[in-house]
Image (cartoon, rainbow, N blue to C red; front, side):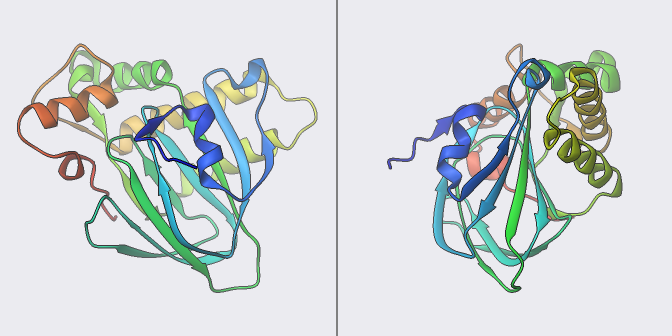
Length: 218
């Protein structure tokens, strides 16, 4: 399958591979998209497109030696195990690979937050400076608060009857937590969407996409 440079949150899952175990459907999931995937034990190369919506990947079970890179940049290695999080905020396509180091299934939950939800969170946290706020990419990190929130969202995803109020409440709480703890102010504002606009502002001023969107490690 050809890999585009960008795709939507809804279409991203088809490029990840593995077995889709659960997906959020219906009105409850209008501003928060979530699904659970059982991933292969060994992947030698997985190119992935970028998406405009920020998303979290949360490891539910398993432990892997995980590597990622953008373009032809050097590989960055991480030990990923239960509770590990990745925050991805758009930008350049990237490639990853991994190898399981335990017998447990390697399962992950992806949670995409729609841009209007993040915009409201940034406005609440930064007020008039919200147009200057950008989330940053972070790899293989732990966060006790996010771990609890993701576990609650996972539990709701597994229910037969999902509560829209519960999902919306958790989604809003995640958005505020990200805005408070994983957002930085940049020098230039843009009238466009905060995440895609931030990338464009960087390329307009001579920075390549990899330089702007390169992941940081906590």
